[in-house]
Structure formats: structure tokens, C-alpha cells
Length: 141
Image 1 (cartoon, rainbow, N blue to C red):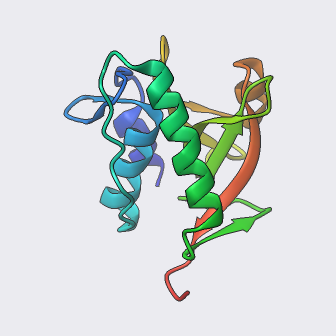
Image 2: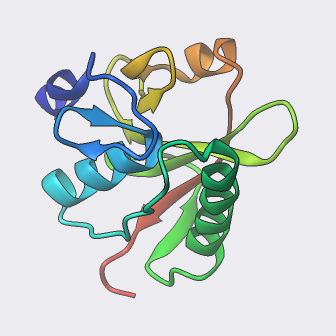
């Protein structure tokens, strides 16, 4: 699992990026889940210049994922591959990453200005993100 993380660290952030060398947070999660965990989630197409539209669509998709995707259940003890939904100061979910149990646990995520990185929960808080919900994909639901 550790090699998965290192394969992505340092890749650039790009709004709407879902591979080919650049990712946004959703695109990274989607790619990691599909490639390494055999979990397929929908692509969120977005115009590269429409950040506000993307943020609204992201919030909608996260709420749908949290509430409607029967295969995703909320958990309190994360495991490799779990979705970590994060909020900023306003409390709205605006960011997502994939949990990995490396160095006492952390999240692989892609952020504007920082690219793809692995951050502990404390480092996430220092970046202004508060983990709000952890979801796990259950194949037998």
C-alpha cells in the first residue's frame, strides 16, 4: 500500500484533473479507488474555469455519496481505501481524500497550490481542513 502513495505524491493539481499526470481531489480519489481498490465512482466533468460551479457540484456529489450510495457506509475507524470527506471553516464538505495506514494514518489528497500529497490528520488541520466523515465501500450491500 505504501508504494501506491509514493506513486502519486508530487503530481500537480488541476481543476477537473482525473489522470494523465494531474488531479483534483475527486479525480485523484476516483483514480486510486478504480486502479487499486476496484471501486468505480462517477466522473465529475467540469469546465476548467468554473470553480464555483465545481464546488457546488462537488458538494452535491459528496452529499449524494454520503446519503444515497448504498455501498458507502460511515465508519469511525478508517482503513486503507476509505473516503475522508473534509470541510473548511464554514463546515461545508469541500474536499476529499483516500485514507492510508502509513505513519499512524493519513490521507492522500490533491490540493490547489500543493498538488498531490499525503497528510496526517494534524497536517490536514494545519492546511485548514477538518475531517468530517469517513466512508467505506462495502461490496456486499
